[in-house]
Amino acid sequence: MAPASLSPASAHALSLLAPTRTASGRWNSVSVPVAAVRPVTGVSVAAAGRRLVAAAAATEMAPAASGEEGKAFVEEMRAVAMRLHTKDQAREGEKEPQAPPVAKWEPSVEGYLRFLVDSKLVFQTLEDIVERAAVPWYQKISIFDYFDRNTINGSYTDAEFRNTGLERSEALKKDLEWFKQQGHAIPEPSAPGTTYATYLEELSEKDPQAFICHFYNVYFAHTAGGRMIGKKVAEKILNKKELEFYKWEGNLSQLLQNVRNKLNQVASSWSREEKDHCLEETEKSFAYSGDLLRHIFT
View 1 (cartoon, rainbow, N blue to C red):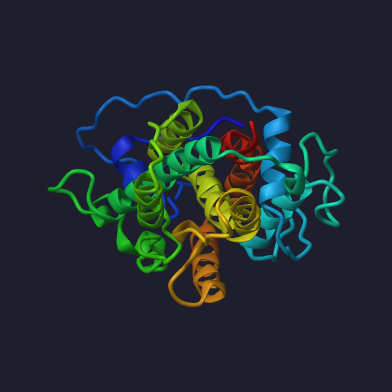
View 2: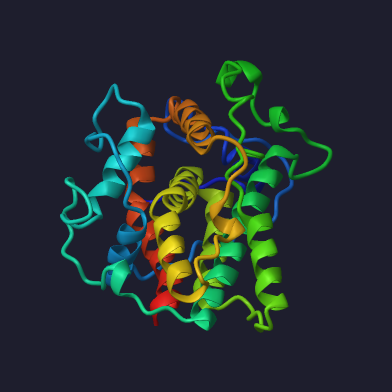
């Protein structure tokens, strides 16, 4: 289905604050000067990429059906992600394996550095988008100049995604500095990272439901299968050193639950169509993340 069209100002400001629709299904509009909206470029969803990120994202997940009313929306997102796993990865998996298991990967430091550099760009992009969404796009206009508070009943004023404790860019900065001190050259971001970062920027401007799908999958997959991959790579090429990328301050389970609650809060005002649109973006999220993971073993 085609994403709804929003002005950059209102969409960006409300991309994480559950935008509302009128009875006709159109977005509420405001008369403010806006810049031209960049079109969202098409992407090729490679089957191998989907399989790769499924292996990385394996985690416990409560059964839930896409489109099943009455369930917390995060459960729906988890269920869709689980179906992109293979049967040996998860009970709900529906995909055939098309990538080697992590245990058989033969990573190199150079390839792992490319993965870390591209991952840093993606996480930094997510953090920057969220920061801008909480601060007025135009400094003279606040978020609530776009929509009346009563429209959203005050429900989303606390559902912000800054400083969740899941942020990774600073941790990756420390890790890359450590590699540099060991004498390794740090590469520039490559196509998988820059392409994904650009896509996330474009989604944040005009398709908040799709953006939320990527936000969820990137952060939650890293805390699950991402940690497992980090441990396996460390065992093979880093003398079991645990990078900062795989450490969190505080109780990780609680940090994740806090974000689940906020995601559910935001999605509670979405229509069924908007929720389904978010879920449909999962394959693209897996494909983009799979392109990053491919650095590690190729």
